[in-house]
Length: 250
Image (cartoon, rainbow, N blue to C red; front, side, top):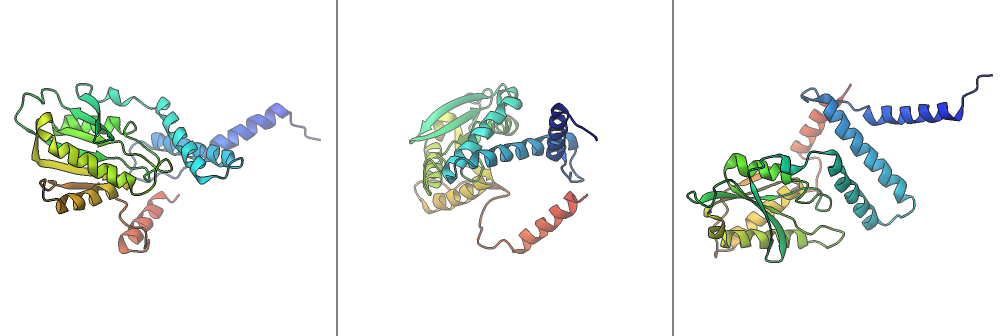
């Protein structure tokens, strides 16, 4: 009778699990498919770890915190944001009670007033923080030759809605009212963000428009913004769900 040792069973189990992690349909327009597979595999691994831990604690708040901690641990495997645009100066400031990161390109104090850009990070309002986006916001400052403020708003479950919006609005007004301190033209300040950050950018823009004590923001850059979840069958949802399913098929 065929007999398998415990060691062989263990190796087969590990190999099967790794194959499961890396079995990822890759869209045809991805330039680096192996890197794409590696990132998705790590995400699947984190979700599996959170699912296992949730067997011992069903608290939704605890699961969110645990997953967030796992994402923070991911930084150990990624290049530091400081490896990008090293010439950009970073200052961490408390803006009217809100943590923000200010990025200034080289020589920004000596030039004519620069444009400003406010970035609000995504992550479902609960996961990522300004540190996760450090590389992106550094590159934005360098490539745009602009002073960039990244808002590090408080996240649920450590706070409740609408604190992320309120903090984003307070930080935006703080930056606009102190634009001269950073050599920024207050009439050339834009705002943008991805996912939940896109939602916050849009709502902050509306609130700024209603406040006649400060100028309107110059522009909005909304990256796959989370604007509504009441109806997931609108034409745009259907189009991109269909396109994604077609691209990701084997």
